[in-house]
Length: 447
Length: 107
Image (cartoon, each protein chain N blue to C red):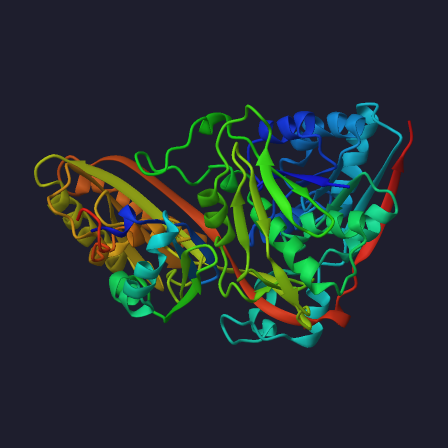
C-alpha cells in the first residue's frame, strides 16, 4: 500500500537525466515536475500573447520525450505544472508527442481555471505589496493566476489520466494530489493533508533535498553532485514517509539536508498556507534510517484559508546594466572613478532613472559594505552599474556609458558586458475561493 | 567563534522577504543558539541590508531557528537591481555571525 512519488524537477530549467533515472529505477507510482517559479508564468503569458500556441514550459517537449516512454511502459503517472500560461497547448503538445512516438492509447488531462485576469479586473483587487488597485496598472497588467489546490488534479487521476498538466497550482499540491487519490484522504482531513504537504514541500525542489544547494567543503561535503539523484518519497497510508533516492545516484539524503529543505521558503512553521490546508510543521520529526533514507512524520494542519493567493504579473520598468573589470594596484580606486564618471555622464546626457545601483563585484556586491568589511584591497574588482528606467532606450544608455569607459575612462578597464531587460514584477492579491473555477480537460490518444 | 562552526543554513525568498534558517549540526547546541541568536542580534548583524523587522521562529523539534527578514530584497525578487535579487547568498552572511563558544568547546 506504500505509495512512491518521485520529484523530477525543482525548477523550469532543471536537469533532465535525474528524472529519467527516477522513472527508470525508482519503482515509482508517480513522477511530479515542479517547474513554475513566481515570475515564470508572467514571462510565459507574454510569449502566449505573441503566439497563442506558446506559453507552456520551454522544456516540456524535451522532458516528455525523455520520460514518457518509460513512464507509460512502467505505469508511472506524471503530474506537472509545465502547462504554465497555456495548459491546453501543453496538452496538445504532449498528445502530439505520444502519437509521434507511438505511445497510445493514453489518457491525458489538463487543468485550467488558474488564470483569473478577468476576475482580478472585475473586482479591482488591491495588491499586497503596493497597496494600489490592479486598475492602476492599466495596460501594464500582464498576468493574474490563482494558486489552485490538489482537487482538480485528484479529479484527473480519478478519471484515469496518466499525465496531468496544470498551470499555477500550489507546489506541494502536485505531490499531495496523488496521496489524496491513492489513500482516499478526505479533503478536510487536515492532519493528513498537513503531513502530505510537508512531504510535498520536501520534494518540490528536487535536488535541494538530496545534497544539492548544500555542499560547503570541509563542513558539509557531498559526493557526486554532477550526477545528483532526485528524491522520491515512500508514503504510508497514515502519511508518514521515507525520503530517499535511487541507489547509486549522486548526492546524499541526511537529517541535515532534510532540515534545510524543510525550512526553505518557510515563514511561520506552524502556519504554512496552501490552498488545501494551513499546514503545521512545528511538530515534524526526522529519523535517520541510514543509507540515504530519512523518515518524516509529525506534520499536521488546520482548516484551509478562505481565500486563494493570486500572483499578479505586470510590466514594471526596464533595467539597464553594464560591467567592466579592473585589476592590480589601484584597481578599486579606478573602479570607483569609473562609477563617478558613469553617474556624471548619465546626468549630463539626461538619462532618466528612478534608481541607480553601483556594485564592486569581488568586494561587496552581494551583501553591501556593512557586512563585507574587506580586510585588504582585492587584486581585481568588477564595477557594475545598474539602473531602473521607464524605457528600454534609456536602459540601454546605462550599459553604453559603462562601455565608453574603455576609451574615455580610467586606465586598463577590460571585459565590458552590458544588457537591458524588461522587469516583469510580481505582486500578490487574494480572491475568494468561489471566484475561481478550476476546469478539467481530458484528451485520449489512441494507439 | 563563527556561527558556521555550530550550524548550517539556507535562505529562501518570498517577494521582498527572506527567511534564513540556522540549524544546529548537533542538536545539543540548540539551546545555546536559541540563547545567543535573537532577532535583535540578526537585525543588527545584517544592518542596512535589511530595512524591515526580523522575526524569529523556534523549532526545537529539529534543533533549528528560522529568521524571517522583512523588506530585505531591495524592492523584491522580481524588481531588485541587486545581483543576487533572491538574497540566496544571505545564508553565508549568517554563517559569519560571531557568537560566544558554547561551554566545553575548544574555542
